[in-house]
Length: 163
Image (cartoon, rainbow, N blue to C red; front, side):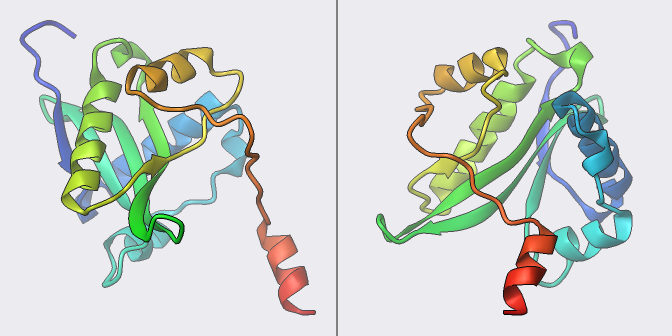
């Protein structure tokens, strides 16, 4: 990226579904789990662009070429009695890293959080992702060590729901 190229952050639109799928696949490869992607254009269409969207996508572009994305949805803290944002994915294509693309995505997410009256933004980062941890710490993120991510997969949900 040269100094003349501007990073543009925008809300994804329905027409961006194939781009979103591509970025999800690249993110899964980066995370070492490409086989875990089950997203399809049809699923994304309903969940991201339906009447009641479940999640939102910010696209980072240079000259209308997608170079990264952030996916998020709103959460609620009963302790704070305020909404928050859960940052699900943040990914920048390899050739555009260290060019402030991730920073631009994070800053836009902070603006959205402020506009919506959110008290915080939460996310996870792999303990092995030292570069990512340092990136987030530059924004003032606290890396919480005393909590662990808990997850029930679809099999566990079905098993428990039938009890």
